[in-house]
Length: 149
Image 1 (cartoon, rainbow, N blue to C red):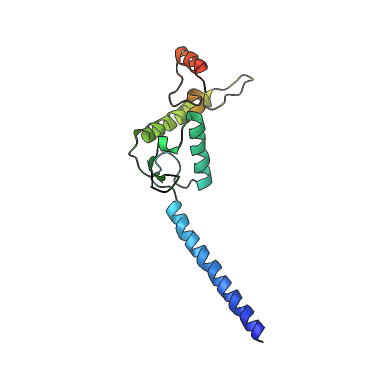
Image 2 (image 1 turned 180 degrees about the vertical axis):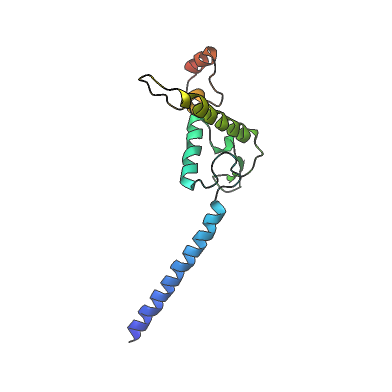
C-alpha cells in the first residue's frame, strides 16, 4: 500500500512539472513571435522567417547584425538582438529591395508567356551574388571575379 502512495505522489509531481513546463513554454512562444513585420506576412511561422533570413545572409554574405541591432553582452558569446528595431538603415533598404523583387517577379517576369524556357523568379542572390553591394555592371562583375572569396 505504501509503495502505491509513493508511485501516485511521484506521478502527480511529474505530471505537475510537465503541465507547468507546457504553460511556461507557451508564454515564451508568445514573446518569440515576430514583431514589426512590414513586408513579410504577419502570420509567418518562425521556421519560415528563419529560412528567409538565412537566405538573405547567404545571398549578401552577411550575418544577422548587418540589418538587425545587436548588443554585445559581457560574458556572453552571442549578442542580444533587437529584431523589431528599425534603427539600422540596412533593414529598411532590405524591405525596399523585397518590394522591388516582388514587383519584378509579379509585374514583369510573371507576365512573360511563351517559348520553351522557364522564367525563374529573381531573388537577392540574383544581383548580390554573396556580396553586400549588388553587382550591377560589367565592371563590378569583373571586380567580383578578381576578388578572393
